[in-house]
Image (cartoon, rainbow over all chains, first blue to last red; front, top):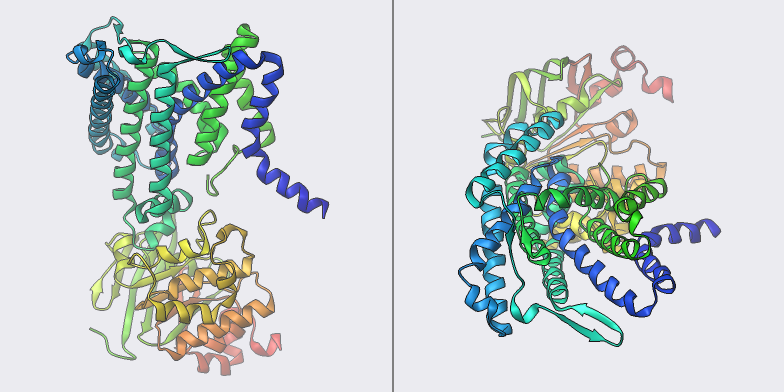
Length: 330
Length: 244
């Protein structure tokens, strides 16, 4: 009986971890700053999720660890620069509709550019190194450098300002808590994309094939599905999501540089490991955990901010050595 | 094409390597249409490798694999599956995070189920109906094996490749699986069954092939092998007389 209860607690504990950490931080931080930091953490988490979700699916489906993923983030951010510069008239107006229209165009452009480059990258580079992990690491790290250098050739080595649209600047106040308007926007967009992804994976046949392929690639092929074709689609979608994440991150930082993707890489890999390689649900919870922990620790003990996520990962791996939601064959 | 009783699947001199090691050393095998063929042999004889080679999961280095008068040795696994070959691997190949229904749905080539086939499957394995919306990972070992076989039966298939379905199951589960295999036999489904349990093989198979060290060393009617205890002893290391 007690074993049964222990089993249930162990099964549900990973889901409860995020609210437990958030509530545990409340008395230490105080209610006003806590709301501000929680929204900031959720926003950061959801943007990290956009970048990490594609990477975890790419790994889950074909065991490909793509270290060049950061390049697609950077490309997305620079596409935002390219689209939003000529639309300065729209973004400088105090019109929410015009601002959102400009951001939507930038988001779509970032997704398309990164997705198309992802397709070319899969055909030219990744395809050559299936099943060869060491070559994958070397070739994708090399490709990351090449793509970043090409980006510098096109857009220049200097950081480019990417001011937030006029209607999304400033903050709103709830009691003593201030919440940046752009963060609310990014949170809503990120949640909408995450929901769309969830519906695709759980309500469509292709989503079912992807989920099954992540669990057992060989069996899904034995059932007649061409996993390579599915993988190309997932790779494109994953890089498109990275581009969207890069666009939103660049706008959030208000400046875009060629290192913007690299700056997310360590956090993204921490999220993948915390969530369990290949698990989209785990990736979501891992991203939110990392976002919240970063913000809470930065406020409470700034000196620990850099190491807090690595510490979080180490603690979670001591508890669940294969991540919170491991996929069977990984 | 093939007619009833003709060879639906034919292997001639099939050699397969895994990495640097040669596992199959010239397998010859006929699987006749509408019949159950048991593939027997000691551990490591190459039975599982033979099934995986037929499915294209490991590629044959040499030799011919002909299914329904078409050479399939060079085809990719999904192409082979789409010819109507269903594979139940030794590890069952169940998607544990998906529900029983989703596992079954993946084996259909359409958005839903053909009702007649669904009814037939659930009649053979009523336990699956109870667990229909539960994650397949929560099923017992026997139930997972039922699901694996049910998934192979959910659509009309020309050939079923089943790898050691009774391994590690309780006697009651084995009886239930034998019942399902006998049903397939009555329906004249062509089956190539790898089985360690000679009693199960004898109960369901029409034909038998025995493998040893990556080669087929014997092919005959099942009844002929079952009746010849000396031959069983020579080929398999024990006979029904020993185990009785």
